[in-house]
Length: 365
Length: 78
Image (tube, rainbow over all chains, first blue to last red; front, top):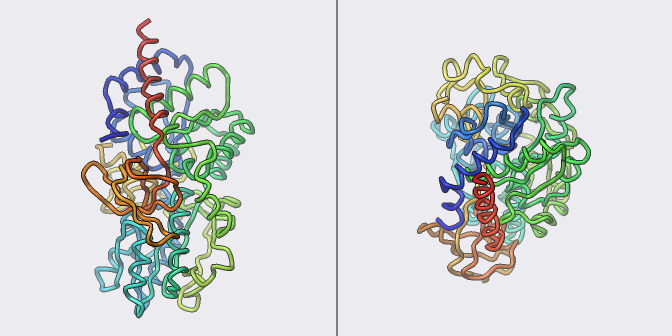
């Protein structure tokens, strides 16, 4: 397919691997923060192509995995209300709350539907004026403005039966949290290309300077990832730390101005809990007060318990938090593939296809 | 979650000015995609995420990256 096949081409992949072998003199640890990239790395076994001195760390790049258990419990309470059609992307259906998950609730008769786009939920709201339609709005900066466009459309159509249950995360504060750890292991970052396609690169430019770490805007095909790793190693070996764009066919410096404008006009930054990691200051987004009528938590507040942050990892034995902070690898986990598997997950990253544990489980560990 | 796929615009529907839609061909599968955030036309390639076109593919930059790969390949043979 155009714009895909060339970046999966084996000649390019082999050339980039040899170039990395040639340039990498020292040991370096490089982190990606995007579940899609983690998935490509696992699927194409990119770590096995790299010299042993180069280690890839898998950051908190899966918004499904970092959505707190309390938020999922709220989703389950809302989804169980009468006269409700609860909608979500497929990834979220099997992620466990404290007692059950959306798929089990659906099996018991709740009207829970998997949709491809939040715009489809607006259509559903128009088609079913007698029902309440809630979309489980989970994601990073890539997806946040898509929900806002859906909300604007619901507003334009005067649909009062549409609302969003938001669990929206910002990536740069998570990078800061990782680098502020006293013993951070991460030498450089591959920044998520599709997040940058919306936000642009400025925040990462500043992080590169502040923390003296290379930040490489990176794409999602295997050659894209190797190109990002190659550029990161070139900088590390030369003692340089700056932003570099290795995904220019998609990401422009300023990102997507229309999407950014929606985010500025409709969202506000809030403190946010990341499942397995804990609270990170101003690392999330909430709808501004003027859109309260579209905020499912406010709309159904008399029926649901507001999630209280537990602050810490809720699955005692799961080490996903340490993996996502760059302090452990999947191979360090004694439960991976045995006690913990996609049928019986100990933690969320084993459930979502883009969770780091599920990604490695899917390709045989 | 942030998965986004490139596809080619084959038709545009501007009936609703606040919600411009396009039919986008993803290697044979055609889907309706909202193009409200971009200034694009028929034949352009866009990257679609969750029903929304988030970016227009830049053909010149795509070529340049492939040239960079070739340059890297030549440099290691020298």
